[in-house]
Amino acid sequence: MTSTPGPTNLLEAIRATAEQPTLEWARPAIPLTGGFWAQMWHVRLATDCPGLGGELVARVMPEPDVAARETAVQAHLARSGYPTPIVRLAAPPGPHLGRAWMLMDHAPGQPLLTGLSGAAALARLPRIARALPDQLAQHAAALHVVDPAPLCDAIDGTDLLIPLRERAVAIDRPDLISLADHLDDSRPPPGRVVLCHGDLHPFNILTDPDGDTVLDWSATRIADPAYDIAYTRLLLVHTPLSAPRPLRAAIAAAGRVLAHRFTATYNRTASVPVDPDQLAWYTDLHALRVVTEVASWQANGELAKHPGHPFLTLSPALTTRLRAHLDRRPR
Image (cartoon, rainbow, N blue to C red):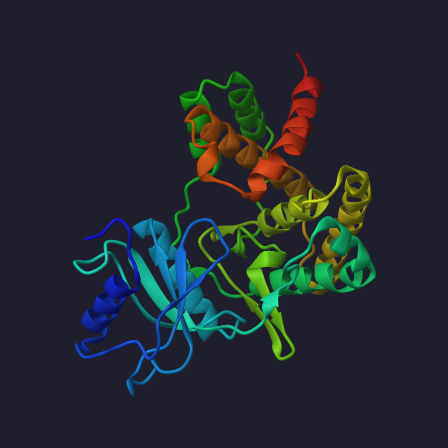
C-alpha cells in the first residue's frame, strides 16, 4: 500500500481490477488540477478492452466511504441520462493502491468561471448575469427529479447538525454550539427529499459547445431541494473571487443579483419551487458548516493545508451573518 499514490500504482490497480495484466498507458498520465480532495489524472490506456479505450480521467480518493458514495451516485446519474461522466471502472483500496479510485470518461470543456480575476469577472458580467445562474438552476432542477431511491443504501443519512455540533464541542466554541442548538430547535417541518449535489457551483460544471458536464459528487446527500439551492446561493452572494478592494463591493452586488436570478430560474424550472422556510434554514446550516470547518482547521493548526479553499473566503462574511442571528435570539 502507498500513502502517495501515483500513476504506476494506479495502473497496477487497473490491471488487477480489469483482469488485464498486460495493460499499459498509451501515453504518460497527465495530472489534473482543481478541487481540494481527490487526485486526478487525464489518462489513456493502450487497450482494445471495451469501455477502457478513449480519453479517461482517473480519480483517486482518500476516504473509502465517501469514494464509494461518489462512485455509486455518479454511476446511477450517468445511467439515468444526467450529464455527468460515465464510470468505466472503480475499486476500493487494495494491495496495489491504498486508496479508492475510479476511471470515468473525460469531459470536454472548461469550468463556467475558469481563469477569472475580479476585474475579468466585471468585464464579463452582462453575459455571466444572464447565463450562469440559469445554467446552475437548470442543472439543479434536472438533478432533483432523478429518482434517489436506488441510492438510499449508498448515501449516509446522518443528520448534518450532529457532526457539526460535535466538532464545535471538540474545539470549545460555545457560540457555534449555541447556533447548532438554535438550528435544531428551529427546524421547519419536513418537506420532500431529492438527490442533492451538495457542492453545486460554477467550478463543478464544465461547459462546451456540445453541452455541460456536472462533476464532483463527493458531497451528495438525499435532502430537501433547499439544501442545494441554499449552498449555491451562498457561493453566488459571497463569490470567492480574488479582486482589488475597490472592486469588491461591485462584485458583492453582482453576486446578489446572480443569486436572485438563480433562485427565480430554479423556481420556474423545477417541478416544485423551493420552500422559503427550508431555504432560510439550510442557508444558516451551510453557513454554520463553513464557519465550523474553518474554525476546526484553525484550532488544529491546519489552515496552511487548505490554501485557496473557498471556505477561507466565505468564513468571515458567514461568521458575521451567524453572529447577527445569535444577537437576535431571545435571551
